[in-house]
Image 1: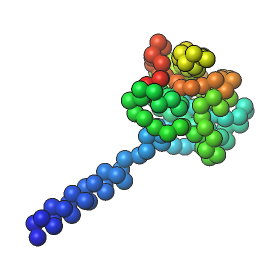
Image 2: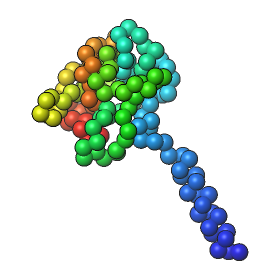
Image 3: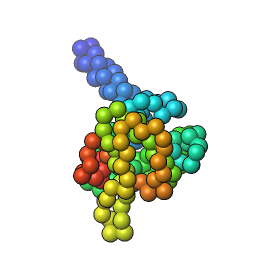
Length: 146
């Protein structure tokens, strides 16, 4: 009987961990609301149209899995599930403390900062669909391994 009880406790603990653990690609979704709110880093898919969006609180590699520390599937826009990498028309930095840098990758696979945005930016800035990742508070460190 004691053995059955131990197995039951172990099974329930494992189920609880699995249910409480979000998938890595959805782990950073900003505050989860439609609006680009204070503290969020916001990408939109189409110019002047915030219907299709992806928000973050932290830096992220939008796709590449090379030497990643938290491997994940591709980030996508809500609600259409189009891939975020190289499909974001615009970006807005609503972070309250840090500059955010949007990064791209050249033809040789080298990461470089494509654009930067100061904290509390009130308007969307064009990324020209050149976004392989972004960093928060880290100007010289690429998001390649995020």
